[in-house]
Image 1 (cartoon, one colour):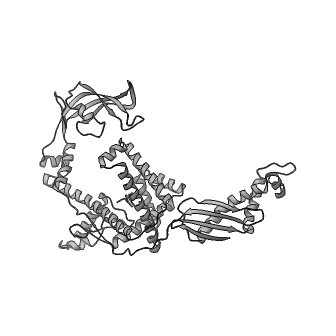
Image 2 (cartoon, one colour):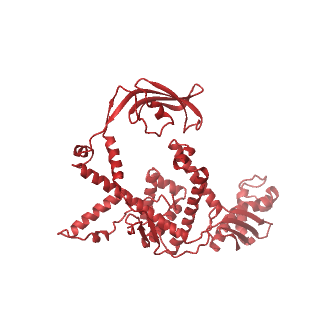
Image 3 (cartoon, rainbow, N blue to C red):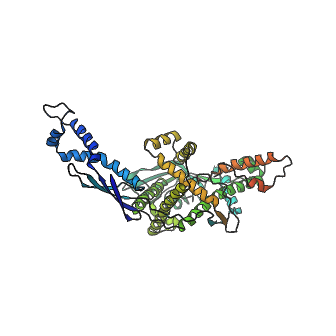
Length: 494
């Protein structure tokens, strides 16, 4: 077999393949045997029909076509390997010569991974926002906890903003009830929002036993965006009484004896959460700097496919949340054009990041062992809310394991880049990437807390006089510290 490659664009190649008749003959013989099993010819047993008879019965051309269908995929793969091409999509194959007893010739156009000249990626410098937990952040968390321990009591007055009401709802259109748009005896806090546009305004001023009808638009179902009449009836109005923020509240709502201890714990938990956010931001900032260092040609077909997938994912998430795309854009303060431009930029960055990280993983000769694959399978299953064993079975059955391996390799490549980078916050402090897993993901808050506890125990055991310097503990990053890579899903959001 002879093959030649023509570069059409940096991301598209055309293979020209010539297969001598001698290499075609085994597939031709197999085609005759297959056809012999499929036809009935008087005087011959099934499967024993001579080639010459088959040529007369079904035609030599049909036999050649059968042979080509068997041989071309094999020769196409050989040509890819021979020319060191990595396909990104299904090829467009055209047979250019299929004359009897002559060589087979075909061409294959396919999108391929671009050739990338890797920039220097050791010692990248990047910056992120300061890690800050304000008093307002703590107060907000404590207020949410306080509400959980509030009590409700019935009141004989009209509902006001902040009250809880027990309501029945029914949506109709043209006098007919809308399927799936009816609820009964639902507890709802007036002013909370997030349900039906106009509901809060309708509830203010209603007392137990009152009802009201208002016009609105549904955000889900078959009548999305259409006007419907909604009747709401109030059966109870309840006032919420919140506990005093004192030591008694701390003892009731937590394991702490004092309110001061409770707020300090809340502040610590918020700080851990902010550290995770900062670690993820630092990782993404390093990747962004790397992306700016190299121009990566992108195959438009791959970008278009990923854009469609991302758009559908957003629409599905909005539908599950009971929100229309327009409502989402209004909340984000974006126009449709701005949303599309932002989505396309994130997709292009994600695809480019994948190509770069693949090259780095190849250059650094990174590998994946069975334990790493198993852990990645479990994390991916947890992310999608599936049973790990069922998820693993599906991945193996549909041959997605190579894709998962590539995800791990990209994460490892990113982790190695981040580990060698210098990331500072706006105040000039170096950001410790202690929450980064070896695969580039970031650990959960629970993992961070467990790692810190382990570090403290280790520090306590190390010296009987408890005079270990803080810097010594900081120099021992706990194993497994680390986010689930939502990004590189975002992105390389991966």
